[in-house]
Length: 299
Ligand code: TA6
Image 1 (cartoon, rainbow, N blue to C red):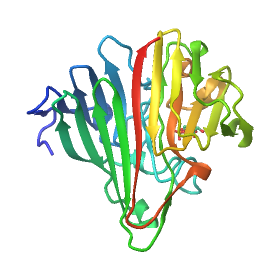
Image 2 (image 1 turned 45 degrees about the vertical axis):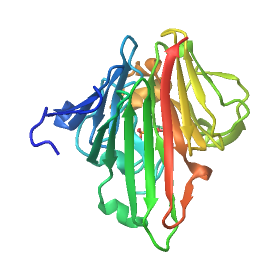
Image 3 (image 1 turned 90 degrees about the vertical axis):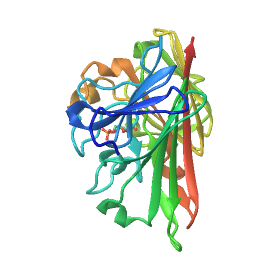
Image 4 (image 1 turned 180 degrees about the horizontal axis):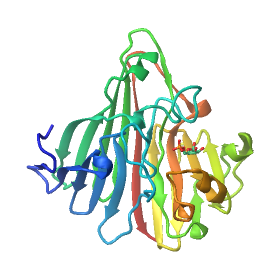
């Protein structure tokens, strides 16, 4: 680990480079830059807070009101949700991974100019409630943003049952100008209506009120079409059966202290993971690799 902040770890192969900085709230942060793009990643939660291609708008939404404090979730970017999704009696919502400072294990610039950074979730008291496991997260920055959450069950005897989710906040020009494609015919749990089970009827989903849905058994690619930014975002994924779509709309926005009252107009969460009935049952010695590839193009 670099001894001084703002120390640059330059790649020797490609032009990809990583700079180690004091981020907001003095939380340790990495800035990764490639010929195509820049990204910012906080060690806390291995949390990608920024990804932007040259000549494009940022891909990820980050709230102006987000906290940047030890052990507090960051509002925006890509929270890593693990080992449970949602509330859990007496414990933090969405697991503990997003609250912990991850170890920076490796920085790997590639000949093609992309740059990968590997993080490891350190042992924590909370993890003792689960079978012994190794959790690595690899972020690859290039013209696209690729994420891989690898969980190894180190137990010799016990199955590891967990949920995971890359809870991505996308930046949009204006929520009214957005449609979401790729979920037609998929069964979902509607959290706004007490988890009522429904089937998606729309080919192009529009957001016109609070939306909080868990789409199940859907390994497919989802697209966000944004006519205001004239941008199409593609979310390709592997080893993920759940897609969660969330916009807090007006009332919920006003209830969240770390989220601006009008910010619901500029974001949509389309999250990729394995939650609820899609939770993972990982046998001893096995590895699960949730992979998500985010790309964007002109509409
Ligand atoms: O993924 C959608 C969701 O589960 C919503 O229900 C909402 O709670 C959101 O996550 C944000 O959760 P957070 O704990 O970050 O406030």
